[in-house]
Length: 169
Image 1 (cartoon, one colour):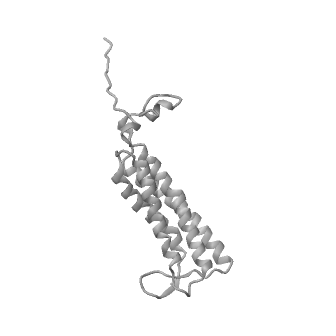
Image 2: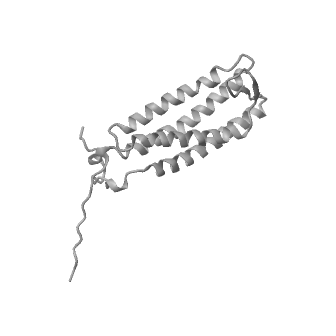
Image 3: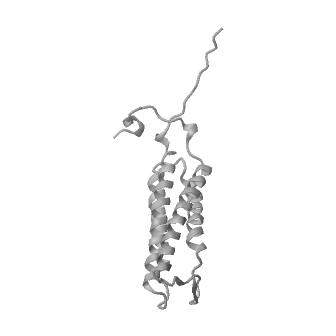
């Protein structure tokens, strides 16, 4: 396997290093994927509510359970995606950054899935399962996209170009 992955491309010219993604691009991608994730989670929420799922869960550290607002499935994926993008920015320009972001993001998503599973006994499993579906939607849309973008900044993914300008008299 070549140390320069762009050599396998149809056009074997590396992208310029000046075009490597920045944290701003990661945040932009996080907002886009987070909004899509939030909209799909809101659809899951609406389908669940129309089927009679109560969406009553513990939202804090206490044992108090309460109704989940429709804003939570819409906004929480966006917040999680932006936080993920800012954390992903720490891997920009590092070797194996794509794999680091993918596996770290997957681990964080797996840990966050403990929230719905470890709810108090009075929370129905239908609520837990739909909350797990919302977590899975957010993982599926956000983590691979952030990992792909960060992977574009890996050291061998681009090359520095030196330009020379010739003046015609």
